[in-house]
Image (cartoon, rainbow, N blue to C red; front, side, top):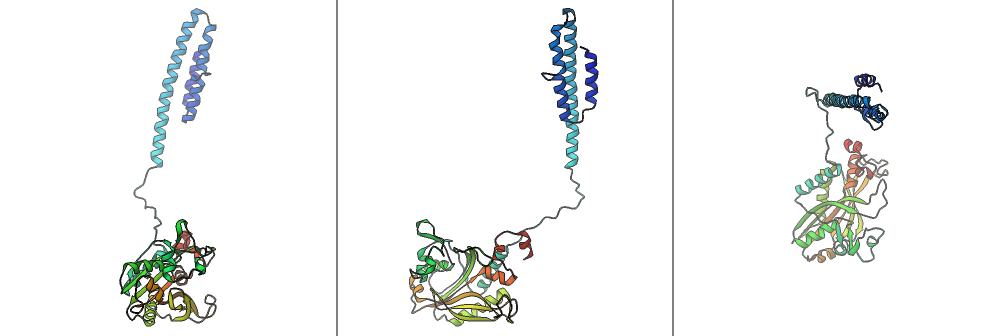
Length: 337
């Protein structure tokens, strides 16, 4: 076995090593179980006794030199790798920074804050309540008869134990009236739930805003004045209101309120079906049965209530044609409104 030739081959191989993977391959080639040096030790038994000792020493010296070379080259490669990593991760503090995309308040949050601001200016107190309700606060105290269709499972999302996800924020008003004595002037904004098929116009979770004013001698005239201020505050001045008779279990008389179309200014367009008007909320004088349910005397106190779909108002104000855009987190859309 020509140890000198092996050593020369080894030294030449080390000169060409550029990566740790190549170095590992070289280690296996010379020091592995099937490597050149190990094979040399296996062949010692074939040598005459007088040559075996000298060849053994040469092989041991060669193995030691290979190990030292491997350690030296490994350290060199690791140092080069560290330098390359430092260069890759080097930060030039003189370069301009990367502009970050800042978040913003969601359009529904903005609308909620706008409506609360208007309500406070009109003397209303902001209240809130649970989204999980019972039958009394969501239906019975609001004068819903037992046979009313909204009590059915096809309209309401019921939970175990006789609970349900509130179908309107009017339940908040009942809880507030149970705690307060008249006069009461409260306003609430919150999420409500209905068993609806999700479409461009309907969603199973949406937002309502409701106002309630209970006092002595409160009239429809007060209601009209308050609603006019809400519409002016949210959409801007100059829009007319139209009141149409309607039925809601918790008010009597009840009415639906239309606003002059915000797209065509009442001239008639496709959005308002060329009527010049858009339905925007329901309202009316609080039903005597509702007053009795919370311990108020309907002979002494009267009041009005109104409720509006916040999502619908936002869609009208900003010209949005699909309610799903308000909930799916589309960044391009949210940055555009």
